[in-house]
Length: 429
Image 1 (spheres, rainbow, N blue to C red):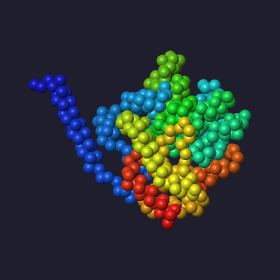
Image 2: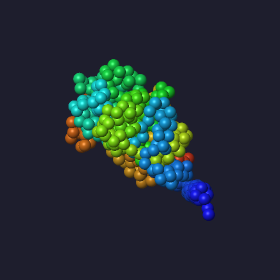
Image 3: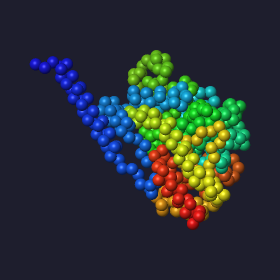
Image 4: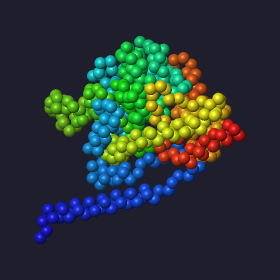
């Protein structure tokens, strides 16, 4: 008769053999991938390969697929890479913004956000930078941007302050850093919370420090087309242990099980089963183990991805320099190290933007506006409580005249040449 141990050993050996077969098939599949055509320039392409898929399959085969050990491992690796003490993974960058703002509204915090409080935001951002502010009953205060960097100026805080100002929400747009030291100095002087929306700028630096690590919170996105991908996913980082605890609780239903003071909370509520002890009003923003498996493989490639983005941007800037009298390019500010999420240009007029967009799209070069333009003009926000500082003329002009093209790490020499030729044909033709 075969012993149970022998059956277990045989089963483990067979599972291992099957896993090796799966790994080999995945490797073979990606080796068969055809190279892209030079004349086809999408906004982004898949940046994952066999390592990520193998990791995701391993997570599925383990049958431990909800938030667990892989998520914790990715959080620790990400925090170290960004220079932050804590990282909390969520299911999207939009959820990261929601979580950060929601934590700052918790009544246990001194100076917590309350309905009616004002939060300073740049007029050009993404919708889910603004949405959580309104969802928490606070008021977005839109400030204009710097046309050279597409980012808010630290000086705008001085212009936007009121007796209701409680926070500032800088956005590092399209890979370009906000000048954070003067911004943080103003925030400290006025006792403001700072949340850095870093969803489009993972790995970007200012003054030798990663953006997202300056404020009370930094938020990141791992959407399909971003600097690294977990398909969907996001992260919140903080150095503050109290904010970290609250974020972990609110991420998962508001329960106590992920909080550092769990024993005290359970002792204070002995009549409640500690497995389901809810101490905050939370959400379900949890990521999956398959996403974390992707993230662990992708994080190792971040530096090389960003180096490639920088090389691409330099080459495109060189190619378009002859048209700088008619085409404004975005600058990398002194002390900054951009990661060029996209390659942005600003034309002379709205009509020229439309014509250039149509010209590029007809040549299979995908384009997008500069994010969503001036968000204060968007119905979702203009029809809700908000305040504008000045005319926001730069944000409006950039929204009307700006566009960006894809600048992913896999951009080939042929694609860069095709893009450059398309601009030459437009401006010289």
